[in-house]
Image 1 (cartoon, rainbow, N blue to C red):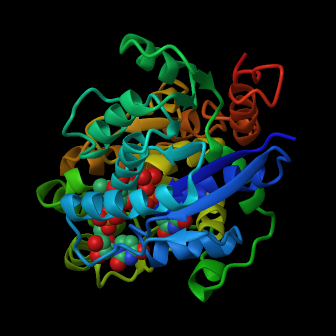
Image 2: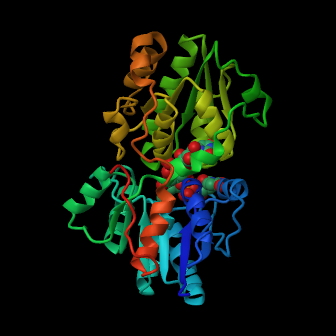
Length: 382
Ligand code: UD1
Ligand code: UDP
């Protein structure tokens, strides 16, 4: 039987969470030899995901350095992936989303004339500086890729407007596949804090904030607003698993430390994170992934950014753009704490991003492309 060699390349926490179920799916396909290369643009935060999903990559470039710059990540990945591709000779490389690993992985594959598949394709804000550098990364990967796995119909329409119509599949987002294994009833956390929080009588706000375009003044405004929310509302317990970036940790320490109901904790492993999200009252975040996960659990989300490439949950009413101005972030947060009707209007479960079968569709599309299967995959949402 003909087999194809498919190499997944990823390097950061969110890519790993969203690629892990796809690696598992590919490993289960008789016609596919699945290989995995991590750049380790993240180290501890990546390893935590590899551990939870029990993935052992065949290649690990181990590139991370403290306070790394975009150029160092990109150049180290490009050189490292080139060597891996020359040795492994895959038929197809899969990259995910919009990180520097994604861009350099796709570029390295293109230089070796290896076919590229882009998972989570077609997300756009049309502002090249926001999110920075992700908008440019994903746009450039869109030009390089041969196969485009779009989570939603709107993502496919974005690509169509750029003249990209061939090899485009609507699959749903693989993060919804990942959540089918991580969220469990009666989950027991590994820390006392998370086990002992009174999720019924208190209002637990889950916060994350790490984006590069928010470094400096925007982060200062956001964090000041968060502190004011905790100070002015005695029922609030604010839980913030702080990203390991030193820039972010310094800001969180400066603006949020020392309050008894503000809990600055280390990054959570993905199981803890998803189960905390399932129990919290409200999510305030600049993360991309949280905007997809929280709506599926019926949790309102205030997005701490000026724009989003994920308009679907805004249209569904569970996500609101809060921007990065202190007063607006404070006011919108306070409204969801004080006005039950405003809260209830946002707190309903919606799943515009997937149905848990994205990985199956992506693997089917790959098999179809390489002639291992007669039929193209069904599209998500049809
Ligand atoms: C990266 C991605 C961003 C994604 C985010 C997910 C780019 C340019 N940015 O941003 O798109 O949303 O990951 O979290 O690709 N660090 C550690 N240990 C870790 C991880 C990070 O110490 O496990 C520290 C290091 O000092 C590192 C710094 O965090 O230099 C920043 O990491 P980096 O990958 O450059 O940027 P992120 O903000 O994480
Ligand atoms: N996440 C996690 N632990 C944390 C914070 C986030 O497991 O302490 C998960 C989160 O549930 C989501 C992903 O990491 O699946 C999002 O990663 P991040 O916010 O770092 O990146 P983005 O999605 O913004 O690119």
